[in-house]
Amino acid sequence: MRYHKLSSSIFIENRKKFTSLLKPNSLAIFTSNDVYPSSADAHLPFKQHSDILYLSGADQEESILVLFPDAHKENLREVLFLKETNDLIAVWEGAKYTKERAFDISGIKTVFWLSEFERVFNEMAVNAESIYLNGNEHLRAHVETELRQDRMNAWIKEHYHAHEYERSQPILHRIRGTKSENELEVMRKAAEITIKGYKRVLKYMKPGVWEHELEAEFMHEFLMNRSRGFAYTPIIAAGNNANVLHYIENNEECHDGDLVLFDVGAEYGNYTCDVTRCFPVNGKFSARQAEIYNAVLRVHEGAISMLRPGIMLDDYHKKVGDLMTDELLKLGLISKDDVANEDLAWPAYKKYFMHGTSHYLGLDVHDYGLWTIPVEEGMVFTVEPGIYIPEEGLGIRIEDDIVVTKEGHENLTREIPKTVEEIEAFMAK
Image: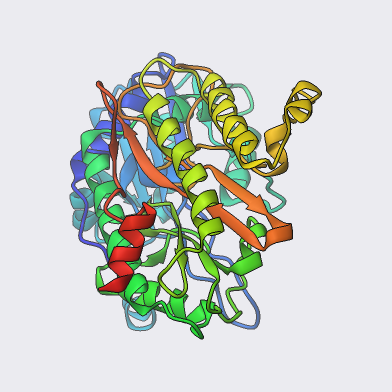
């Protein structure tokens, strides 16, 4: 792994949170992601499943974690199963975790090789009453591929059909939504690297530069700071490209007079950063660009001020919609009649601001978290309102990463120039 080793205390604490919510005499099982083939004998770069990462830190393929906190044998209460290395693997791929290295990363004392899985798991399962199975229950998930965890779940049900079965996801959504201080430290590092990337790109911006060249500047800065790269596919959208919400081609020239919308974040230690800024190619906002930009900025700052402990996310999004409605009325983009006759399921402001304002952030860019409980201290959200006007070739979004604190918030990404004045001053240097 490129990033510096994270403290095993992160994963020890996460396991304690998870196991404290299991039913008595239950075990839970988690697997790594598959290594996906591309074509011929090639494979896509491996990306570990965030659940086994969250609970163990094991950033290696073919890993299995079993948690059985009520096991009679103390050494079977937390067990990690790993692919055993050999000389051939060491030569062609690099050596895999040793048992000592796995303990150092995870804090799990009992480590077996995968060849022992069926024997050891059988001893654990026959002494458990319930088995917690994992899956993907994210609100935005759309999965068409059979996953490694799916195959494991099918195997367990075939061999242990008399057990009671429970779901791990409700517990994970509850606990992953609130970050520990140790996790926040890693997220601050991801934000720090992202800030460096944005400041590098601001210095490189000029008429005639291409979107992919700006992408390359980000990647250079991220890799130099021990990030594996982008936390998600970057959006670098000049001019009217910004009106395509998930524009990822990044293959057009940036012209004098354009704004460029950047939706780019680094990952560090598998934790993500997610930021959006809009910068003028020539270093100066036009009067119209500044007018729309400042309207978005007022909604952005208003939304951040409302994101405090106790608010419900549905109520929060409705209040942000009210802020945006007021701004669009002032801009003349919508009328009072539009608002009076709006469909409450798709309010008038949605014509120009069609996506949500905030989502959870963590190991996944759209991280786990519940919408059915009040916002609480330690939750991390993006705040990303936007106004999109295709007929003017103008799309503006502003996004920061916000930690909810007891008294308000901590903005992880505030150091990236954000006001019109800050941006123009930085680009004029």
